[in-house]
Length: 376
Image (tube, rainbow, N blue to C red):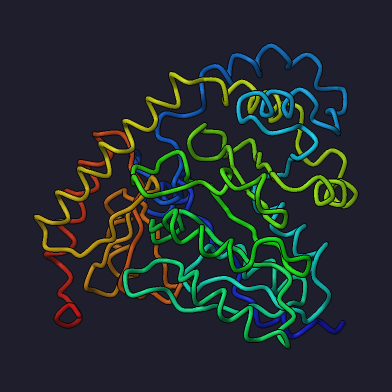
């Protein structure tokens, strides 16, 4: 059977290595996974309690409208319910947007070293992915993206994806940059501006602005949120889309009616109101990031200051060799060769004992594996 060249040429998304697989391969009892930006505290306790209360109704299909969840989100986020919908994680929403708004071989614009799901969904739906370079300080170059869109109508760009903060770099765009970007591209009827805010709850920068602040002023703006990080619900798979009502109406026609299961809906509705857990998660994350920053500085490693729950750092070595040596010591980090970064690894903030064990193992491995060249 013939397969399209876009799919044949795509680089599949590579998730973090599971703990159980590492234990089997290396005969280890204790393994720390700091590879997938997961919440080290586990799920929200309120979410777990809510799930236990509805286990006896799982013979029934979930509510296809997610009424209870969206009603809760509407109240907490101050967004009308009819301007929101749900997805089986943000990944499904990204994929559905490319299917809905792009014809084959039309363009999707994003940045180099941006979340790989944009590239995967574009290729799977036979679209042309266009990536502008990062700025010198590793941030999405919103000016370059707007310049490209306005100067290249022949590219037929229908979606622009901006991750703010970005994974895997942890960098962000400022309020002033968003103001200018929306001034230039806001209000157009030929492109959707999709802001992916999976890590927005971790931001500490004073000049950051969530795109949610612009949702009533920019009619072609779409905002994505996830429950996988701050709320500790990665295994439940829940994402949300906030968009103009007409976008939500079309999106709901295309998504599967039971794309988010009942337990996930109940868990998300409880988690978003678990303010004590949210604050505990943020404090733990920030303490972990600050610890890594101090230790990387002590070890002489370059790293990017992060507004996510992870840090991208330069090993100055073949990162895959470092990664494999760490696996043997029971530590799973995230290689980012698929983003064109052969010397870098990504590490997310864990519990204090996990963070300390990670630095100890890393320090040992760096002594064993010599640098490739002097750091550039």
